Length: 635
Image (cartoon, rainbow, N blue to C red):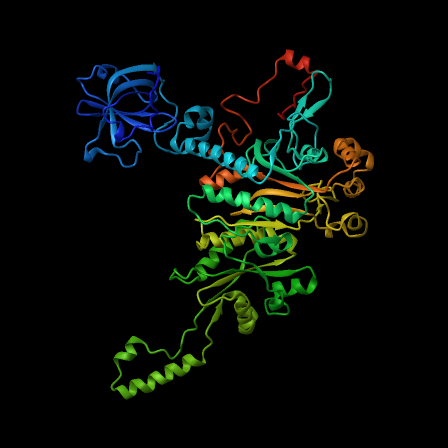
């Protein structure tokens, strides 16, 4: 028999009853039932119950073991009786009667619990990550991550892609974040950079005559932590293809990622045909270039209904500036809800807007008008005859017939009047019990807030269907954007993308009007992939960079490898990169990227487990020709 185990802790079944087996693992917990000890033994694969009674030669050792000790158990497989079967465990029909127990290693008192899933301070969890990873949910998440990556590799191979590895030590590149720099010992005063993405290398692979590249690529960015990205490093499914247009990449990669989602969605519905939404349309309808399409709210412009109206705040803004628009955020209550949306909810949304630094959030809510001639209970009890009641009922019905079906309420409704209020209701398809919120100004300045308000309304009214995966493509991104801090035009997305219209657009059009062959894949409000058709023409590349302030010499110096390659026959090419961490997080239902990453840093970009970053020794600094100049802190 093997020194440590004949089976794993998940392998034994009722068919093994009567067998002598050997298991090794961690003591998950120990229970004393009237002098008989029950030990739940756990390994990577699962859990098996061990029984030690006072007559067993293993009992004396069993009395000493504690949680997270590592032990070896020899014993006989026996069937559990009907009332002791654990249907929640694959091994729940059997148990091992211990004949011998060997303690392989002991464990000190644990700094955090392993059994169960209690909430525990994150810094403790990260410092003792090797213990944290023993928790069932986190352990399962890491294994799911591995399976998802394997599925990506399999599916990429099935559609003709080959995996190539690209360098980790490279040159700095303008990918939109700070580089991690690595000092060179051999070349004093010079630095390598860890790749923010394999962007230039994968393009060079296309220049080299290879086709359909992919890589599960580590990427490094020295940027502040974000809710949807860990500090330091992340992984992406990196893709590049030659002789393709945008449509080729979308139609190739959509089935791959849709298949991954379907394989690991746990039965949740997955979008079958991803909508393609232009960037401008996404911003107007959803207030975001990564919209959560599970939220049914679609914003619309209603400027005309407020122009020249009695609501002077909006009317004066519209009259004084042609850029001003009024957007409506319709709030339709769910049909399963009985409570209409009323003033209390609207006032709560208005208070939220003020907490976000806004002056407020205008609103209208609709209700059925009250009939002034409605028969009260008291009046009904006073009728002397059926004829008297019938005559009174005809009066009530006539008054009801004369009333409008819907009545707008709230300060805005009073100011703009019933006709404009009704026009807004009809445009948005609202009914009694529904409401609408309004924002006004230059859309470029309020669009982010409008998008946040849309999200807030959807969540507050429980309109978001959380048991599905809604995916889409966002296309036609602006090639350039205005950098307000530096008062200059800057790249809006990926600087290596092809502008729509080519060099003619770069030479003749307003830079801020040019669109790019760039696209994102979005799922449930998260950007999970981004890509573009590349600018493979050297003169077009130079012109694109000139507009943001790089001259030809700077382009040749900073992107020499790529620029040089374009001189020697560059195929039209394009690609994308899908964020593995975000995809895994979505598929396993985790709330935090640290729940799907084996050894993450904390929010201060510090590795508490390995104590990194740490100080370099004087000898190391001498080898690298570096002298430190510490920043003096203010007294």
